[in-house]
Length: 244
Image (cartoon, rainbow, N blue to C red; front, side, top):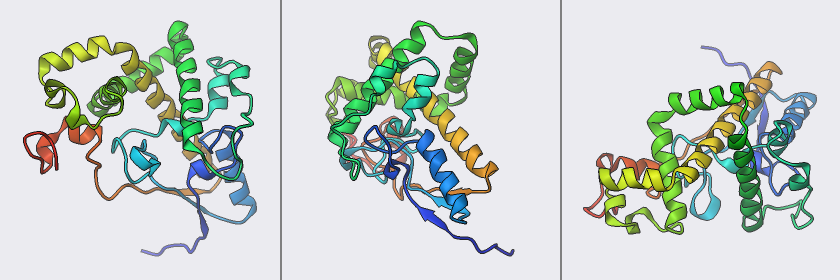
């Protein structure tokens, strides 16, 4: 097999310049793709796109399947009518030269919550159908991940082995009760994943249509503090309390 000699740039999407604290999969990603074309490049290499845990490292992910909601382009949500322009006024507190996750995370997550609230309050038929299809198609991991994130919020981001024992051990009755009590939070995380996957597909298709290949990456190991380990402890070497 012969491989064409190509060159490209290694740049994680969060490092793209933008007005909302970090780069994302919105307009700034398309602008970078156009820059690659002008520069005669053929490849865009990125780091893992999974949601980050402690330390905000893309190699310490909360899921092997989910996407990082910080990468959702906020302009796209405004274009759908789910965000008011006032929410997206460039924040003067953001440093254009570096990412301050202590500021970026609450700003972007609040914007996502505004968008989700608007979507669920008045969804149009096409968007709702697409949302439900996404949830159905990805249920094998999405249901566990969104419940995991909702429980993280409920327990103040404590390690899952420190949750109530029945939830840490996924006792059916406790899991069923948690799904009812945290239904709103679960729905928000499903909305976030739906939008991430849609925007990522759009960026990838745009890049490929312009002759740019995207080379991805994945973490070497599944993180202990992840929906994957919590939902499938039998696949990992853990003690009776779920600890490595």
